[in-house]
Image (cartoon, rainbow, N blue to C red; front, side):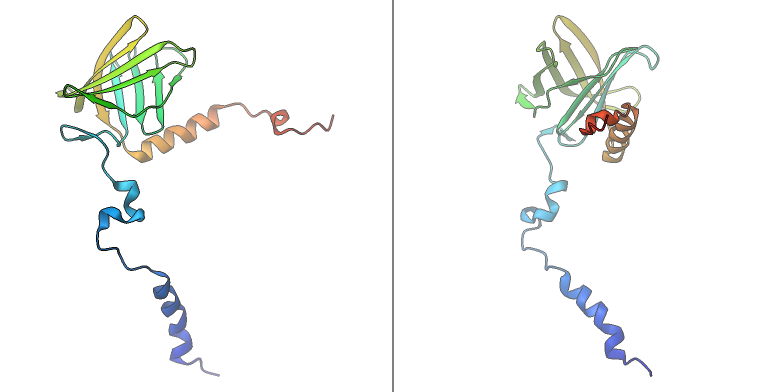
Length: 167
């Protein structure tokens, strides 16, 4: 028995019917929400992930700044998450007033400018009385996902945390 052309094309017709027509205004389309621009600092989209760096690669600090995530990595120290907050635009700068988990005040300030090595913004990080200066570099969302994945893998597994009281 030979299948008819109609039955062979039926799956393609069904798949085509699943697609939606684009809205008149692509910016209002919920499917494009992930690519909407955030607050801008010059030509820098602050909704895009940035990595702030200061000092040398061996002795410096880094800070991941992405929507929903601010993670400070001191030189030779344990990473410290800061409360994630959106920037406030003040006098041509983006200011992130946040805090450490212990409640110490943290202010991250980004200013337009470029740095050696491809930095796209100038960065100042105040943690309590300590001030760090550095540069901000564009970071891909894939790099943020990779870092989150690697951080999750580095946490030791505790099978007792699952609530299994079989002992």
